[in-house]
Length: 203
Length: 203
DNA sequence: TACGTTGGGAACTTTATTTGTTTTTTACGT
DNA sequence: ACGTAAAAAACAAATAAAGTTCCCAACGTA
Image 1 (cartoon, chains in turn yellow, orange, red, blue):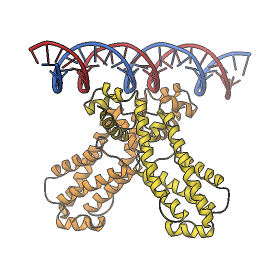
Image 2 (tube, each protein chain N blue to C red; image 1 turned 60 degrees about the vertical axis):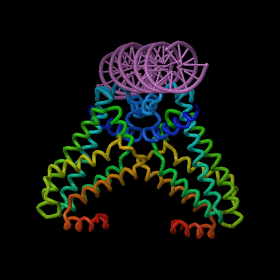
Image 3 (cartoon, each protein chain N blue to C red; image 1 turned 90 degrees about the horizontal axis):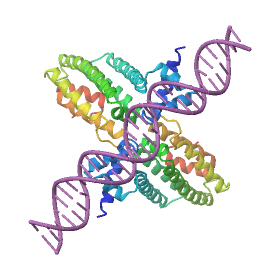
Image 4 (cartoon, rainbow over the protein chains, first blue to last red; image 1 turned 180 degrees about the vertical axis):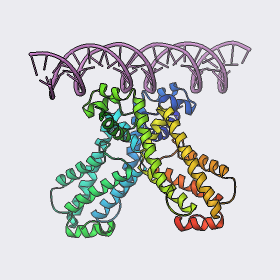
């Protein structure tokens, strides 16, 4: 029966998130599930495929969260704010070593994740910035340029190779980066709007 | 010259703390330091010895922090509070996967750490609890029993095998545990004193 | 009861990676 | 120009995990 597959994914996700992809072996998963390796390999051709499946589900779940944030009624500044709030929450929940593992041992999967993330960001940032320009919150530079700048900056920070010692610093770095960029692309009207949400951080 | 040794330790510590002990190989360290493996193996007979050295220094450093907290002037309740504040700070700074790595791949070293920690805790808790009993803050049960209970509870929580999803939850768990135990061993006078420091959490 | 299918568990092979060693090359000081 | 010392590279050995195979027990069905 192929309700095994779901159970394996569920259990493996827990183990992986706790122990990292590398430290957690297929043997361990099988043993602790009281299932034979054969059963696992019948459902997944390799450990990598299992990891890929789990990564995809994770992306999909977070993708939905972002979509919800995007669905927020209101002006572009509010939407942008909501999205970064959501991203921050996702990052807080994440075990950072899991990301490091993928980056290190499964660079293919990492590339997929990065691609997905980039496409997602490009699409929503473009739409928000266009909206914000019409509303007079963002300066009227070419949206593609703004989006590229935005994504490049975020990717530079939210990346395992970015030297960090702990999650807090990392989140802080992201926040600072975003504030910097927002300062550069908002009109006076936009800055005012942002300060309402962000406790007056943007001058 | 044997100023190499210090440089290796310094660099390796950075790499290990960021990448974990397992993911970080001697080859990587050598390559990134622009040093040959021979140089590393001349100073350390094995990777394990290098790790042990780093772990020892880490323990020593934190041990000193605890000693400082212990040196705080004041009653036993204040001292206890200070120490757990310090421990909390240390935990926040720590990359938890590094601990998981040691626990998993170098159980010998882990046992040493655990021993050290236990001895340290036993010594300071015994002294604090005796002091607090004289001052009338703690109930007059046998200190050895209280200390044993205390240490067992803390070890149960501050342990890689304790299932946790993120650092925050873990710290929270530790805090709750400590509050529970303190509730059980303080007199009314002690509870009042603790609430002054702890925003009225102990009822 | 006999038969057949299914999956667990253990034993096995294979493959990949890393440790630790040895050899070669390079560079620098005398 | 020569000798030494360390880097770089090539090597062997060990380890550990992935993936496969086999055997056996449990269970359902005829």
